Image (cartoon, rainbow, N blue to C red; front, side, top):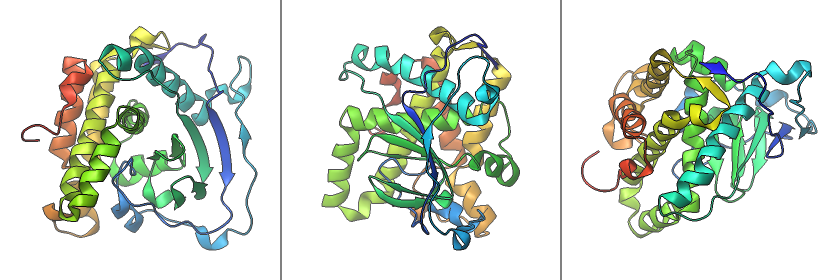
Length: 283
């Protein structure tokens, strides 16, 4: 993957939330839940016991000539610029509402959000209450070392997935699914899987148009393959095998490795949001 080195990185929607002031409690998975789900808590190291007080966050400086421009946070912000630029046009063009920007907040270990306190064990997640994607950038190392997803497109895939939850919030899907879950609590896991697979598909749709945004110069099949590998690495079945030694399909909240790969591929190959209806028919 080749990025446009001369592109201006818009950081107006990004902030460094710093380090939280206490031990966070992982958010419930479902509505914009973490990319890997609560089960990741079992395999992520959490240094919360050493947290005393909080570090102040602030705006990011990714301007040309700034040595931080090549840092992880600035690269991730560039990816989100591309993702949002695509959806600004695609969402209303596909019959949805006018796109409204989401924020991305980088944090260390714990963070307070509109959805409650959270820690890095939840993985990257979207909070619909404050329209923000939360990301502990240490997760990228965990994704590579513990799950073997170190390819060039792993990070953009994860971010595009979380912004997929923002699309679900904007077009009313999140609210409809939440209402269904409340009416029938026994359906929560199955509905969560459909929601997550749709977000995977939306990530694939953006990937199909990423170069068109002008912020990414080249996206190769090898990049797409690395995104598929990342999707497979964090399937519920793969994580359960690693952490429990057995697979419990009834407890899935995000979908199997095969399902996550397949829905990302579907979005990428068809390149349109309409291809991402995980709520009609089998998944």
